[in-house]
Amino acid sequence: EVQLVESGGGLVQAGGSMRLSCAASGFTFDDYAIGWFRQAPGKAREGVACISRSDGSTYYADSVKGRFTISRDNTKNAVYLQMNSLKPEDTAVYYCTTDPSWVRLIETKTPGYWGQGTQVTVSS
Image 1 (cartoon, rainbow, N blue to C red):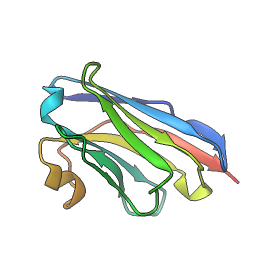
Image 2 (image 1 turned 90 degrees about the vertical axis):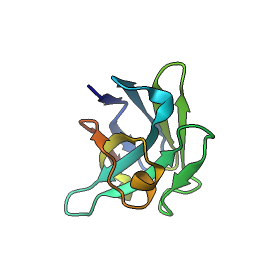
Image 3 (image 1 turned 180 degrees about the vertical axis):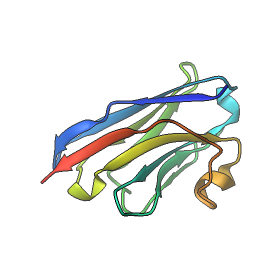
């Protein structure tokens, strides 16, 4: 059974930093691309950052480019999202997701597996 468990959310002031972690289990981690999605109240779900399964290719939404960095540690079955220069508009529930298909993460935005989410709140 695929399991994704996020941690590291909380409250931070605008301009601050936060690091989200995702612990993965139940599948061959190296064979899956990983993505972070977010959803704010009343807004559409947004793909924030994704990392490929093999060559480390990354994708970032325009709204976070230059501020967020996604990374993965295949030895620990873990994924991280380092968020710097946070803005109030980054406030959302952040979800760790995974799928064998890179296309499903970055084009159709429909990864097959989702974690339970972690709340990130950025105060102004």
